[in-house]
Amino acid sequence: MSEIIMSTFFKNQKIPKLSTKLSVATAKIAFSLVLLFKIDSAQAFASKFNIDPSASFISSYTFSPDSVPFSLTDLGINSGDTIKLERFGSFSPFGDPTNEYFGAMWATFSTDNRLLPSRGEYDGATTDRVPGAINAILPNGCLPFQCLDNSIFYISRGDFNGAIVQVPIDAQFIFIGGADSSFADNVDSNNDFAVGINSVSTASVPEPSFMSGLLAFGVYATGLQFLRNRKKAL
Figure 1: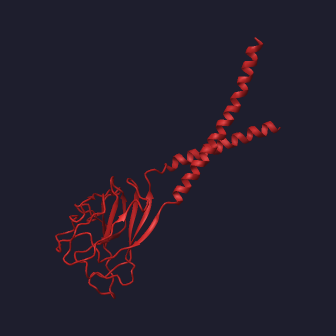
Figure 2: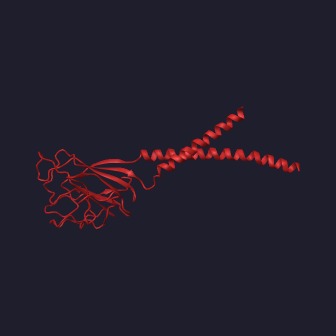
Figure 3: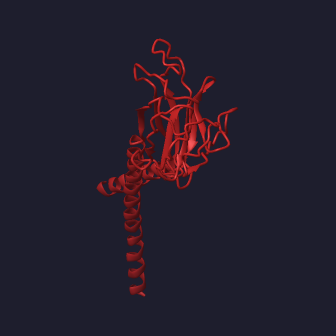
């Protein structure tokens, strides 16, 4: 009988100790995850790149340099991430550096960085030169005339500026350029025509409500351990 009583006594003594260890461990994990979440949020990218308005990824009437695609991997962007694209500055579509008012900009995602030669003629805004072009995903929907039927979408036009886009599956590059039909006479004398690429959300970021709950539980577990230590001291 005495053995049973002693066994029960020691068993009851182990439960608080085990609970305390679990509380401390949970608190450490909670604070670590919250810290990691904060670091991840702090590392959300915000980049700005100049765009040559005389370069193009579509065929046009006149010869123009090829647009250089941006590597999504180099930018730290993955499939499923949501990004904001925004146009800065303007250019002249008629070669007049004293009248740089035009700011239309468009883009297309691609599975690779291939860009075929221009045919030297304009037959509409098509992705014939971009074999890997794939459709963009606009979570908020397309504004009127923003999304074309061939994987090209406008970042800015005369009536809006900015596009929230979810990176499609298999996208590895994005082509961005001034929106025009003839590019050779486009002039940006002060080099202010640019695109801003900002992180809105990443596919791996935990929900804020989950992180708040985890933080609250960590605070509770730490407070519980403090009270137990205090009782022992008394």
